[in-house]
Image (tube, rainbow, N blue to C red):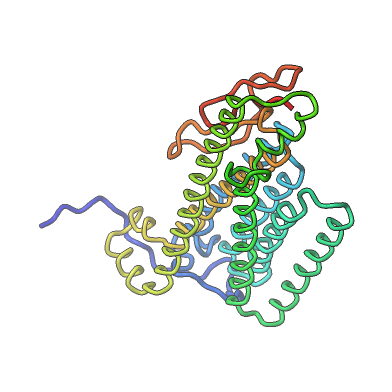
Length: 332
């Protein structure tokens, strides 16, 4: 006989406190098997990590003075997690709308942060009005259709466009081979009236920009891997639901929790969203020529969370000491 881990058998699902189910979606986790007060206990509690990440992001934005739009984006993430918590607890249609539509609204915020940078006030106002109109249209049309595939398609398109736009901005302003588009070339224009940069200085700035770019691409790759990995697990959870339910009951609790694919989706997309917004904050400071004032703090790629903090020392002349993560001194 093989070794069997100690476990507790699953209980027979009972009538829940929030019955009947009114949502248009019901995931693979069995309903009300742990408590009558939460329909999907794992899918509910995994949102606490998302809430914690959103709170951390809000705190860092407030503490280090990052642009307000990123604070609002983290607040949006907190609302997404709260809506998801309530939705999976109750499986009620209004809570489903809170969960899904807050994802759309938060992505629209990141659209504004990405496409409004460096634009005149009239453009920013027009963009804001357009995004509000788009969010209202998606809200009304989704409520009319009540088809989750419409929401998923709209969210995927909005996310893909804003991520690729951010990548384009990053490459355009950091890649030395783009010439005048790179950060060091733009900064060189500011200083041209006072003195000519030496070849050594140019090479140093090229190396700095390349280092920042490598770290940013690693962060993007890591965040996208988490997000896409969560999507794959979520898809498998839907496709092989009957098998997964059978396997969970065979191995019992708490081990069956590891086979809750939608819970992994919450965990991995929560991390992916956090990485994306932190990358957006760092990119914004670089686009504003403030990489001498801020640096990315990320001691371990796999055992710590990144955050953008103020540099340890910023002298009055505008120079800052560099760090191993790719931030280097720069004179305005």
